Length: 225
Length: 335
Image (tube, rainbow over all chains, first blue to last red):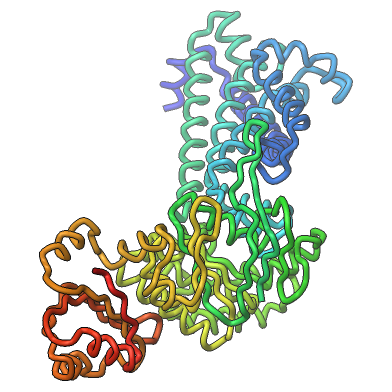
């Protein structure tokens, strides 16, 4: 088996593939964590300050919405480069796994924030009204009613964000970000090692499939409708 | 007691004030079942939401048990709302919580009940609304009637003194409507709680309400005891509602009357007189012959009533009318 694999993929260093996969996993995992930590409150704020919502604040909404839109409209490959000075300031390097995380979060958090806003808007207004009528304050409405009701939508949003981050993480290979993308660019592209390219792409596909399956399972588990 | 003192509400639409409720004054007594009937857009939904201040009035005062609630600050308002339960047309249950957790929700929000108090109250309420076996189900697993029972249990959790019902039976089939209405009537009797109920069906009012206000285009156009309003409607809107609930087609009725001979009377019996064998004895006394053109015998809340349209020919009409009035029958001459 091993002989066959080595015969077919002459250029592939399996230990290298293993490390690169681990790096991708770490980049996606950490950037997803920070994207959710930042994107969730931003999404809730976007929802609350929106038109005819609990804390309607046209100015705050406009500013927040503008920032989110700017980050989302910059192509990620550009964002990677634009973020370099900021990343160096924040982490000390713009290279490797650590250097890839700030641009990934800058791309992932606003994306996730919009998804949170959308799934909160899907919650029936009657639920908010009923909760208000029970004497709940805004914090209780958010934590007790809105977020639990929107949970399946938010989990679906996390899945979509995670998958987007997989592709962003691969892209970060261009500026030396590490992981499978880095491998694909350095060996598969620059050294014409097609077998390395095939393996990295196959691994990314498998990774995305697993994420989607896990996300779908969770959405189903939390859906009571 | 709920008092409206020149309460009004208007919405700003494109810089113009659109009135939803014209200045309205009325009093709803403690412990009564008060119905508000009107077509959609008549302002009844606004009126009921003014009571727990989900809508803020743009003028006037709302007094609950003598206290001006429009002046409450945020904390006082939240405490006040716990004393006013509310149920909704589409139930508005949390789909992510079980039946028991839905009922416990307002108590948890209040933050003044211990865990065991909440548990005991929830099982007591589940038993009261007949859903003891469904505690751990999710709302999506229940029928419409069961969902509304959960809604009622949830509204009662913090022992409110007022229960607001926003079209609570409009999404239910007739049989389920009947069972939800009798549950509301029982609750009103047992707990002495004031119920304000809005509906577009006069039949709902007839079955459970003590008094009723009829709304049209943001105004209360008629108000009074259900039996008075129902049996002797004055305002055209009220008449429409009453005819609608009795399935009377006005055109057909006019035609039927046109074919009848003699004097046409509408007799209204209320209470015990409904069951007395009155018509025969009046006919013998006065010598008139009568035929029944239309009629209905039913109940308003717990009081039986009958309303008959008769044509009378021959005999002494005066004697007949006097005999009827002497027997406490309301006589209205239609022709």
